[in-house]
Image (tube, rainbow, N blue to C red):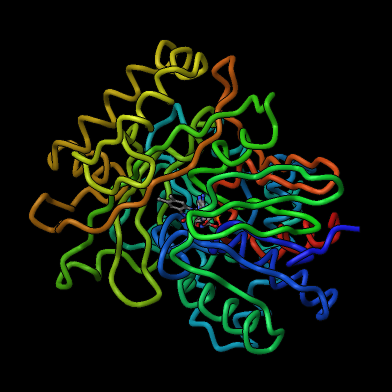
Length: 398
Ligand SMILES: Cc1cc2nc3c(=O)[nH]c(=O)nc-3n(C[C@H](O)[C@H](O)[C@H](O)COP(=O)(O)OP(=O)(O)OC[C@H]3O[C@@H](n4cnc5c(N)ncnc54)[C@H](O)[C@@H]3O)c2cc1C
């Protein structure tokens, strides 16, 4: 038998990787587990640069991994936040249709909510929208009382603290995985600093999940297309324009498109994000560029199929990225009185969106299993909300 350094190695200290490691320890505290993270701390990428929303599960296809894990993850998340004093607030949100063409979509979302057994959701007339958000305009809406906001970076810190101090887990930061090889019944993991032998491996590498998956699965048929999402913030004196969360009706083909307003748990109101093709996977500014990342995106046949089908929508997103006036115009649909001067630049996040060879954006979570290696290949929103449930699911598979 191989002499293992670890029972399980987890790549990535985002919310998904941390939750996998934490759940493995909950199940069996004696397992030797190592988290390897290339950055200096937790939640440096998607998990720390998102909208901070606890999603209710209203949007997702019943039975999908998203629906199952969002709804069970939602309850675990709240229990966890209560137990470990992580700031959160179940403040509710409204979804607003601003045009008759959106009414069917709005109704479909309501039906989804019923199918997903969300209690207390209700349809709103134009005037009832004002009861929740007096400054918002719309022709119809839905109130979702379950939606909330939370401090995800703090949650990631607490998961790491518990993993290390309560369970004696190991976590190495500033260390990058560069190669993975199957060796007999074990897995050899090479980093830029050393080499480990582990009984099994879970990769939760977010924006690099495809590159890591291709190290062990030659036939990996998904690629990550990175989409940067930029936010503005409301000036402090204008924060009163929004009480909680206001969302547009999503386009089912692009559920992540559509700027929304989000009150943040640490204070302030964010507006955004847009979705612009990023020329660097972890590039948070318009000018960030990586030749390798761009070459990989352009070399993937699926990317060109998406570009051909949805190029016009993509151009609109780029325009909104470059033009504050266009961004403001998109927000004015929901909040007519907002003007450009009310907005100041906020942060940005980059979404890891998996895409197949035929140009389909993969909507559901995707977890690829082989004998002793698990790759989380697609964990877009609501994976932050769902992280404790995804972690439990994977720990059970291990
Ligand atoms: C703009 C935006 C808004 C969002 N809003 C929400 C929201 O409101 N609610 C919600 O539920 N979800 C939201 N999401 C989705 C959510 O943030 C992500 O689904 C979730 O954070 C994914 O977590 P993760 O651990 O898989 O990835 P990440 O947080 O990206 O972590 C992956 C980690 O792997 C590390 N890594 C990668 N390669 C290597 C390597 N070779 N060696 C070592 N380490 C490596 C990275 O450095 C990174 O730390 C949003 C996402 C974005 C981008």
